[in-house]
Length: 84
Ligand SMILES: [Zn+2]
Image (tube, rainbow, N blue to C red; front, side, top):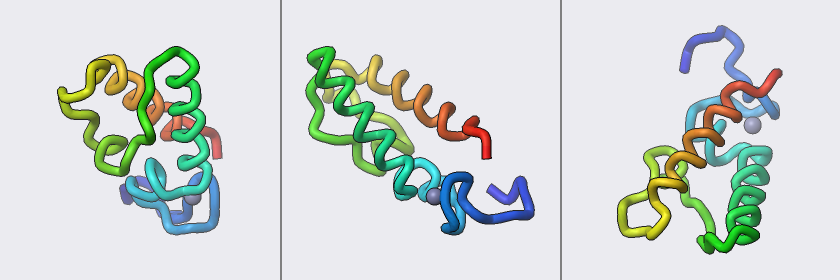
């Protein structure tokens, strides 16, 4: 995002971009997998969240799309606010 002069990931030593932070960082991947497992535990069954869905949100075709989009936004906010 070019807000800081130090371009490494908050969580690992890769170059940080929005795509890396939200989708490709191993910590983000683990986070979204745990979100999907949690959703299954409350009977909202989705196979996974793909990169497009994480970055832009879900289309209206999913029954729980409003709730899921709120969860995705809250998840991304949490990833952005993680202490270094
Ligand atoms: Zn990373």
